[in-house]
Image 1 (cartoon, rainbow, N blue to C red):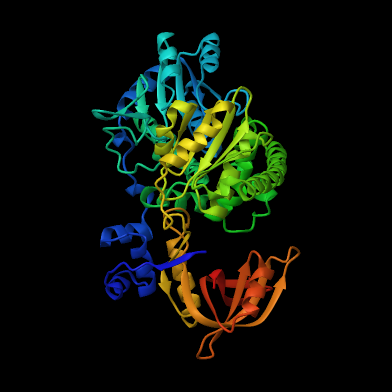
Image 2: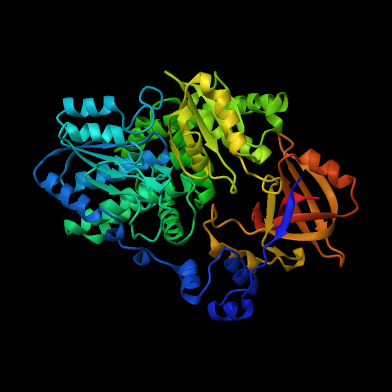
Length: 570
């Protein structure tokens, strides 16, 4: 069951359309994304890299640059400690290349998901000491590692944290108290007192900002920073950041560069996935290229993905791209198996009546827990945690819905957890096996989600007749790209359409093609992807159908036709 709602945000759409030379429909779509005022609309449509906020607005940036400038000039050994997901790998790549370009004596270490776990741990600090490391720089981790960073400081090392995760806190009688590590500098836009306007940067963009400031301090040509823009864009999409403001500009610029990238690893990954002659979109990064980069950290070692980005020859890059694509295919199969097991558990136990799903799959590979949690969240529209057996304890990942801040709810159950961290929409944790049931009970007893909040919402931008679809409108909709979280693909709707000439196609019978005709006899091609036979059976029993859709131009064998891509129906 779904609840369809129409967005009704007011503005003078005719006037906005005239000012910017766009259809009033496009003006309304922009308003629906909470972009208001002429300057904001102009930036949304035509914003450039020159408009991005200064990296010096980030708290502790001056301290971090001052420290690193001194360390680089004095040849001190620097170790970058990253993370094994797409954001951690790209952050590491940006920092190591930026540092080495400035002449730093720097190396990297990306923790192994199974052997090391997330982030900076005591064994990594001991290893750094053995290797004569003077300075540790974290990326995409570190903000929750107070004990480990204190250990490094006690051993005489310098530590700089670059991260974007939520700042750990405790709610006390005197209010909320934030727990920051005792690092020499902390660069995280979410920390108290940080003046940086965009609080939703991914870890790679935080790293990018540090390199921007360092290049400025070392008087490097501005042009040199541009090689990192496509990498920052990949991370922003891959880590599901909101595509608004600065993030949207970075992704838009990065995607344009990605189609003709000079990075050999990315060239071969694009080729291995059959995208070399295509315009690379946020969809391709989020669902094709990004998962390949993530796959090595899930099923092998993230060092392989970093090696891909670092590849110097076409041959080396092609081999690594092939390996990562094959790993991703394995990951897909294992994910599907885990998802089926999770659904079976929900459907056949008391879990189906609980508002927060805590699913224990002991034999599932721990790296797949987050993906499976995401699939379960999508199916049931409930916050979902998937727990698996790790090396020393149970590990888990959670994915949430908009009305439920996962990180804040974990704080309430923190006494049951060995370790945890994350965002409102996603989190990771470690827990003792004997605490699982108590943890499940704790989350559900604290849960305040209402039936209304648990109902999936289909948010319609505009009820628009299919007769309004035109080549020009579709062209203008492209001005709103890239689409993703915070800048969703526009969704239109029309009631009472007749479905004609319906046929189910595809090897997996997952495509339904038809014509959609309105009451005035206007017809447009329609297409539905998914459970096509279910759609066909439903449509056959209805005289008329109400649909939500996205308009696009279909190019097939040199012939262009307009079509409505159906998203929902009743």
